Image (spheres, rainbow, N blue to C red):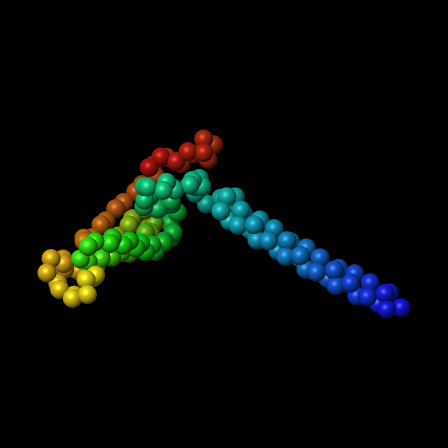
Length: 150
């Protein structure tokens, strides 16, 4: 009798967990389908999904659509003998119309002494390095050729 109860409990629990996994898979499949429908099959303006290069910062995705926007933050550290240099940037990208992207970037550098005496001789002043503005226009987008030219 104990074996029968144990086996019934075991199979009941395994059935419940397998149904939960099936429902999670169904939900993931549904969300994937919605994403594909929204990004690839939506008939707005043509837009090809391209991988962005690692060493070239595109202003917006190629073939950007009106209303797309994005914030980016970057950070870097340079270790020097007498001071550390912390470099950071904040950038905002947006597309005011289809295929046209703009970017505003503001880079900063902060310096911090690394020696114990904290003498500021030879340590540069903290500064805003500039204001960078950029624009990008995708003048040719072809889904048939899977090509975008900007």
